[in-house]
Image 1: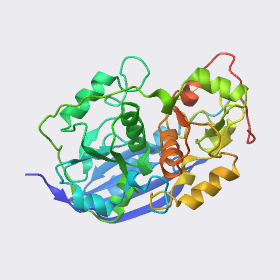
Image 2: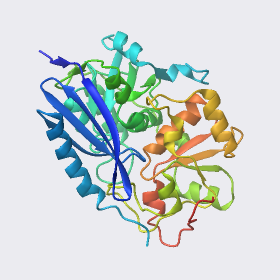
Image 3: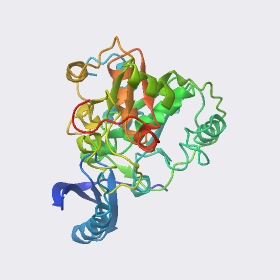
Image 4: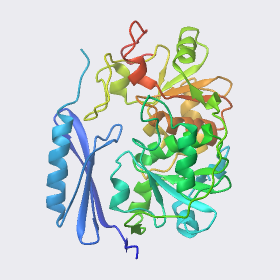
Length: 76
Length: 283
């Protein structure tokens, strides 16, 4: 039997991470919260996380995104 | 839909809700984030992975014809199936998938306007677990490379100013300030853009909710940058997926007659020895 769930309580915000912007999107799906973090421009996903609370999901995804964005290469 | 030249290539989220179980319709999700499908997807949608299923995994190329036939057959798709594609990031890789389906001659492929983002924003249901269908038989044609640009023709177009080149990357990638989008690994040895290319970032094609802008707005935007239907147009980005979205807009929504996607894009050009490169904000 396929489980069908409705996404609820979607929230979006943009924060600065050093020189770059990140967009944090989170919503509840079934018992858990899903959080994804992208790099705003062009909007590519950097990290995702799933946890029982929004805070836990966001914290884990932002931590991963921070690690990735720190590797951004600028021109010589 | 919004006076597009070929409005039949777009369907709304409402349409998908109503038709997702039609026997001749197959909904397919293709995301940048390859784990998004597993989190939840449109009920009945198949998931395709762009990194392992929509490319040649040995050499850098689009999916080989025999592998596409196998993928479609195993997805329960035959030559008469209406394929509805959607995905994250306002349909970047959905357009990439559609571009490849067109290279191999699939007649009826459409994009769900707004993609995964709009579906979730509207609180529409997501299904867990993969969808499975009985295999069908698919026979591809082509490849039709009239919608694909390779390095040599892009170089000639730049050198002879023979085509309108459209760089759809972010302004910082275009100017050469950064070598790839913040946090992303695929990179290049040099930053900048192809000489003569206009900067029209892909995101300018879309509204805040992920849907495409109206035909009038899109027409104004491209024409004001000198990208007019009388010219051959070559769109490029970093690896060819963002530019497939702009290719889709120019070819189908605006109906430009000669539009190609240069999928080698900046990860090819920016790694070449002795290739001409322009830096800064001007073409």
